[in-house]
Image 1: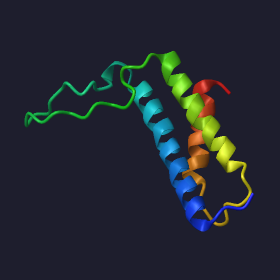
Image 2: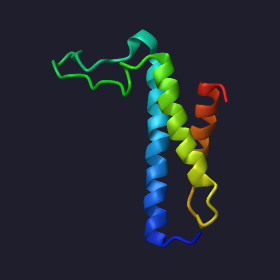
Image 3: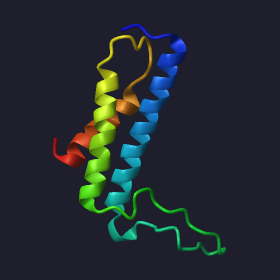
Length: 102
């Protein structure tokens, strides 16, 4: 497989977005009952942003992470990445595997 550099850059950005999704879902899960639903306000009366996936069950979070990590692993297996940095992506894959029990 041979992709153009623009296509590689777009795919890498999509992988970074997937890594961010994994990190956000796990962070929200780790907050437990402290996860924000977007209905709270700070001391100045400003709305506090909702934590991503705050309303999902544990099984739903695991399913979301499983889908995202599957995409990352598929993309990472391609052999034409050149010099793209996978540090953040590798960390997200590792976290996802721990979270899902893989």
